[in-house]
Length: 314
Image (cartoon, rainbow, N blue to C red; front, side, top):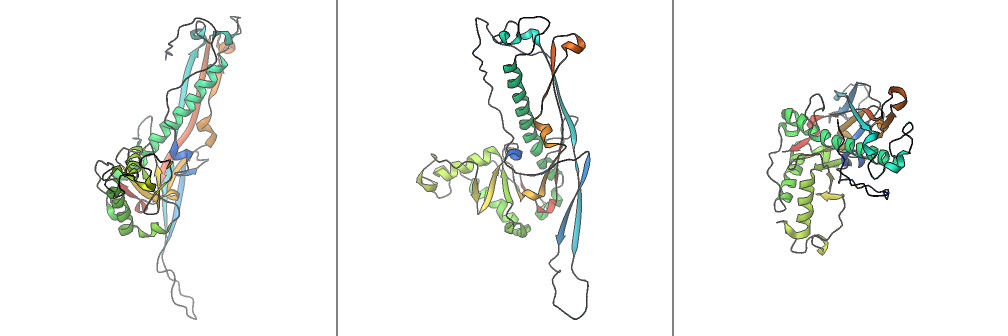
């Protein structure tokens, strides 16, 4: 594939490059799921649930009692790759040509460019994984994301169905967040006592909640909103709703959210470092051409431990 180059060469380059804003992989970077490394192909995830009938009154005899349920789900990873070729000749009339050297037999890809583009490839992997984790659709280039899996298995979720959603705005976001917490309380109340319970929300819902906290919704906060600061607040990515952590997951569909335990969501991979490694292979010495290959290979996949511990709003 060709590399588009937009430039006007008229002197020396000041060694600076500008990248378009990139979506960062917040779900992985901020610890929103449990990372399960060293998965070669498939891994069995076992979760144990102890019944309420396990503890009984004492007696002189040994009497087996109680229920222990062991659930198994398969975490399967998929192989991915980046293969991209850059021709060094492309840069001979560019701003950074001076970094390539002046010999036609020993030219190298400009280091400023190779470092820059390598970081962009790594950022692209992070952005792609963020979206795929939540809404990927299984195919040659993707695995099913969490929301796709939950929608397909709605009858197995907490309460036996999804929570019917709507378009979330600053005026209704508190009410809609309340629906998901109420569903947890009614159908999976044991989750409320867990430290790693999160409400996962999209960028859009997160923004609407911040706006409501600023007094621009119908949440009864008044014109100046939370802490009397209106929308001029530095709330960061750490918000609570009814005492439950709200986790911002940019890869989620705009009007989707879910409540479950971080320890119930798994991201599988081979070696974690593979997702941030780009190899540069100069084929000039071996093939006699002027090309440099950018190569990355990694494995990734997701799985939910217990579907009955997921409340999904869509």
